[in-house]
Amino acid sequence: MSTDDAGILLRDHRRRLGTLSSAEPWHATEPASNWGAIDDTLFLTLVITGLFFVAIGLFVALALWRYRHRDGLRAHYEPENKRLEWWLIGITSVGIVGLLAPGLVIYNDFVRVPDDARVTEAVGQQWQWAFRFPGEDGKLGTSGIQWIGAANPLGINPGDPDGQDDIVVQGNELRLPVGRPVKLLLRSKDVLHNFYVPQLRAKMDLVPGMVSHFWFTPTETGRYEILCAEFCGVGHYSMRGRLLVEETSDFDRWLGEQPTFAALQSAQAQGRPADPLVERGRELARRHGCTACHSLDGSDSLGPGWRGLYGSRERLVDGSEVLVDEAYLRESILDPAARIVEGYSPVMTAYALDDDSLKALLALIRSLGEQPDRAAMAEEGRMLAESLGCRGCHSIDGSAGTGPGWQGLYGSRENLSDGTAVRVDEAYLRESILEPNARIVQGYSPMMPAYDLNEAQLAALVAYIGELGDPAAGR
Image 1: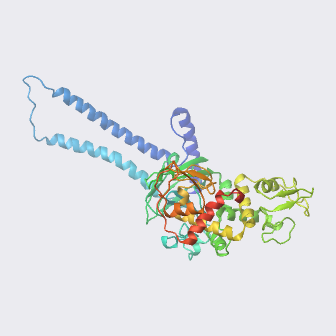
Image 2: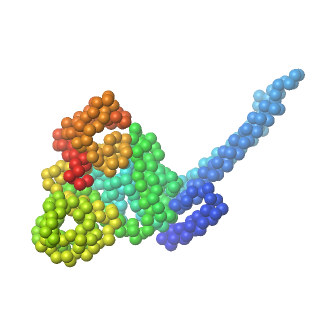
Image 3: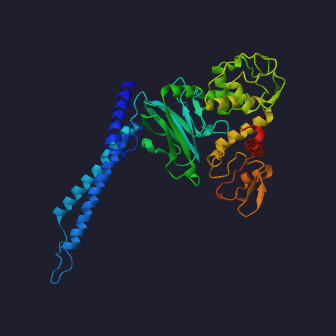
């Protein structure tokens, strides 16, 4: 399928959508190219099984009436009736073919990928998603379980040149351009999962040890939910992601802001945080020319240097002082002339950035302002949590999860299932990781497996959780 064919398909689907909305208002929105074919197949299955259900019901009713008990009437004994048997075999065969044939045709189209489809990979893990896009070379690098680690949770081959420019999205949100065919590669790191987007009628298993795939063309922009439709453990119900279908220009801009595998590995090798959000902020700073005025190493420049800036106190031109926190930095980006630091000229222009871009820039500035040892340890804990799948049960944004959320957890007091209370400190967190069922927080089930971690890994995880729970960390 060429790009022109995809455009024709998109227009045809939009025309059909208009017809459906007026003639068949009960139909769901048609957001993908395979929507109609799969729904038609399901409808045909419903018709065939419905006909058989009615026919069998009528036959049973007829048999009950025709051969009901009556005085002097004996049932006719007929041990064999080849004519009836052939009729039953023929009708049953037609019904089975009617059920299987459309499904096989649709499945063949489901896995027969157009030549111009964009390749994207979805990786499932208990109980979270991650995604990978090819870089400028258009090829995904090889991957394998032998390369999976805290710094490389997707197991990308570090020696494969095709994988160096791969774009890594560590999170539960996948974005795709509208009107462009997508070949979705599916890989599991642990157990059997299933990638399912109900509105797209897209559904395929992720089988450990192999790569499955299917394709579709998103035809309507919008936000959809990604579900795991294969029972994958006690936290299965919380394995949810988001699919955002947007215009090509918006998608290209977002994709260009995501870090590459080489950038993440380089950042790790240099001992600085390899947080994808930080790397995205670094790319934004480069793209908007921020580093021309604000140094990253603390050297003098036209504007205040970012090294050690976050958390410091700066003197303003009006004689007052300000704490450089998230609120001040946001104001300085959106309205830079509002409060000027003493010794600098009001030459910075205002930037109209969306909230995601602002968060990325703030993450970069914050990472340059933290103590290196603490930041490095917490970053190691973050990568370890990604690799072990901790984020599948423990949220970091305050949302409900299978286990207690980590935001604000450290230092809080939690009620336990035995009626006692405990202060969440380092000792309790260590015990909860090594012996998770020793003391259960009220409202949660004792289902977390024990982890055999060394001292350095324990310290890193505790540092990461402590950073999320410490208001002074600004996260």
